[in-house]
Length: 179
Image (cartoon, rainbow, N blue to C red; front, side, top):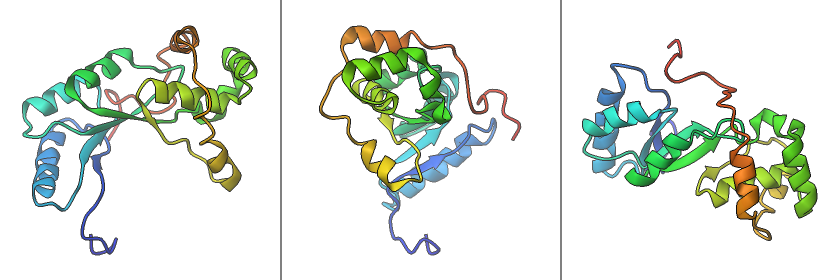
């Protein structure tokens, strides 16, 4: 906190579910939250069974789970689980590290709505209730990425994107990551 020159952090996350360590780490986050030093606490890359274990030992349910989420990895069971436990999901790699431009169905939807595949995927996330922060280092793209509030995807188009799921990870698998 001193290095950041802050009295309070907005959000503090456990980055990976390291077996045998995340429950102890979570207790430390709960203490920081109780002391008012952190406004919200959450996790990253937790699968449902890891969340269930964490919650069974916790006083506070994680407020956010930051997961890999994109058209080729929709994790429907995990997304449904979060609804029942009031855990906000935030997508990382929502644009599939640029691979969305290779997905023919997204190009067709982009043309249909007069938008880009980026807009289609961001809008899909928003309509699913998923927070999404697409990565970009180019200032003009950062502003352009916000141009998603003047249209809505139809239910059929939402399902079309959902059906692109291949359970294909771009990043490490939380169950098989070598810590």
